[in-house]
Length: 458
Ligand code: ATP
Image 1: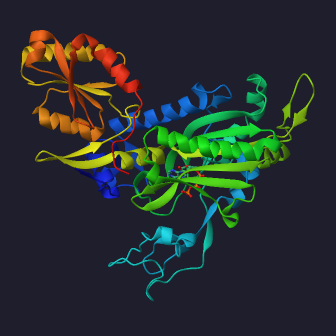
Image 2: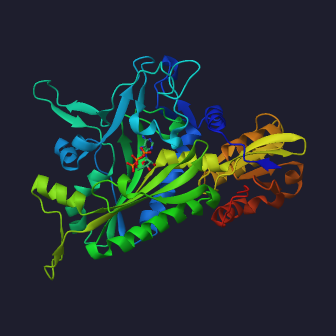
Image 3: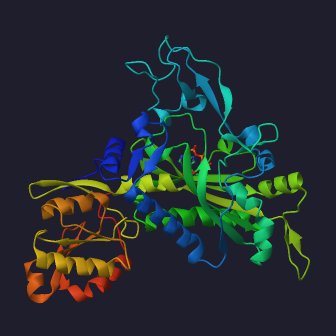
């Protein structure tokens, strides 16, 4: 029997217990909204990025990759509108000394917002709350480039990866010899001085983004916008997110950025409620126009043969790696009672799972079993991410693998010593199949390539 008993606390605790995510700077008391990723967190995050890049670049002919700098010329952020407009309205409470997003105060979606007093209240709820008027607070981190204070230049850590793509439009369009519609995809760190409480890795000061700018002829923009909303929605489903927990929410007219003629959020039903997972925006010609005007370089598409030229419009799907990883973990988290035992299992899509198979000698102290298991492990590790474990009771070893989401357990037992067969244990159904040890590599490859659907109830 399994229940959808997931809470953010359970995810935080599993993440720490199994080494996915640790609070940052913990030995110094921690730093709010910052996290460090442990071994399995790194592997899971890498798999999320790999699946995104596969869908965006490897499986397509019309999108190329880019890796631009984190620190760009400061004028980029003036032209993009971030210096003047990338800000949140904040209020301070003179009583509890905390800071809140003014636009979240009355928003039922942000029920969880609490002040620093005990018992904690919703800011503004009691006469004790002494809130200031809202002030605009820029989210960009500033730093200085240059050895000398006098000659140094103020620069910003990028708050999104997208601008690095726009300013490279000409380079890429010319060298890749692409004609719109075509896209440029980038994965990289972004930094935002977020004030609101983080909800674990949902919102952090630094995070990774996977953004793609798709340049299209202006009269095709609406059609491509709808295409990308649909395409991105299906990507989350492809990797196992339950349809009952995913929805597309088009922005209301008053929510739209001034340059956008259409934006939709793909939202996930997190334990904190429906929240943005990914945004898809129809940005029109805003970015290329701004950078053309500010830099003096014409960022338009020109056909070298016919001389045809136009300013493309841009469709942008933008997804946070960390938020996507959190979604996959929340959606995969399950608890069930099997026989008399309770187990926690991360039912991750096998292609996302940090470890694909665990190689386990049934009796860790049996030299013959260990020898066979080590040989199998050495063979498999050359092809996929596998783990060897001979430490402790087999039940405990299985439970550890269940918690990190390893889809297959390969167990070497007494019978292996007689006939060279092993068991393959399925993480979700707990069914065991006997196969020959020589066929293990092919079996794992086949299992990984199979279609997969979450066994979790919707
Ligand atoms: P939000 O409304 O949650 O602040 P946003 O609309 O400002 O997000 P975008 O600028 O559209 O976000 O960024 C694209 C994606 O980057 C978001 O959908 C989210 O997945 C991710 N993201 C944005 N800010 C953060 C953050 N502080 N921490 C983690 N991920 C983030």
